Length: 421
Image 1 (cartoon, one colour):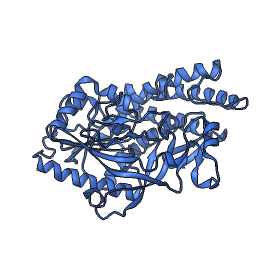
Image 2 (cartoon, one colour; image 1 turned 120 degrees about the vertical axis):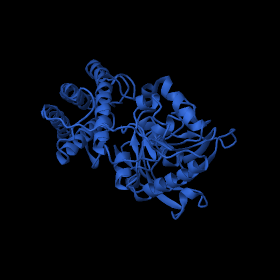
Image 3 (tube, rainbow, N blue to C red; image 1 turned 30 degrees about the vertical axis):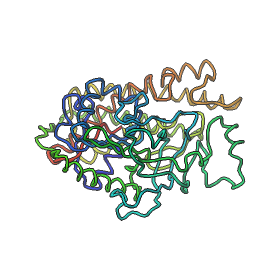
Image 4 (cartoon, rainbow, N blue to C red; image 1 turned 45 degrees about the horizontal axis):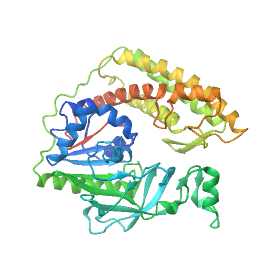
């Protein structure tokens, strides 16, 4: 969704593709595939073997691939991934696992991606993994940007680095938190790399260059798109054409949108509940800042996405269109969101109470009540499962149909983007 907003504001033409579109050959008319962030494991699951093969073929014949964060991780050789690039993901114990916010990066000024861009710029990262980089590895490629110093709002876990005294003992903090925290652990490591597969090219970035309002990150992204587009012309790849009909249908029955608005109200109530209990506050208009030991990204994403869908309908009433069984999906969305809201409130209260007697981690066992609710809502892994996964899969499909309906008849894309979540 963030990527769609940034591309739209810049006037860059694109076409949204889901995993099923890719499996059916949807990449055949495109030069560039852009894969935004999100859990790589979920993206790989959605693509299945057919989608994996199509992306590999797309690159082998000269296509170009841009991946941000989870989209970058999906291309690596460390599972769960597609094995498109001869680069692995750094082991969790070695990397900085909970970094977010602005960080300074620098790159090779002679590269076209850095055209008219200063040697050092702030970009945004949102809990990135890291590349296990070995420049001597065959075909590894080269680095387009390297991490440097933390920016003004850079955080590790729930600590804003600029607030910490210069004499702080990072080893002591790391022992207390039980994770790597020292920002120097990421300094000098690659943030963006460029590599090849067959006749194709990949640019993989753990920096979220598509973050809305991130001026220099967006500039770097637009330069990269221009650079890749020129290379694609050299390889003879054709621009998008014959995209097929993008269906846009009006829906006279307003019940579907009433259900979606009620789902948004339930999500808004959950956010207000967390604010009232001092569990989180808004860090940006689209991102929560939550207390350590609980989840926050999922709750915030649920509200922001439902709110976005409702805003689209409010601005363009009658565009509701959208795909098969829209009313049935909307009713299921309302029911699942209300159920999620009720269980999440119970979980958050139990987690808050548990913090009074000890440290609470997101994945560790806390007590029977917390553990049972967590499994029901999120499964037992960091990349959410349970009701949350089912709910987000439903929202993902509906959002994709909604965005396609909004763009029906007016996009002649030269670039493809994968699912917006």
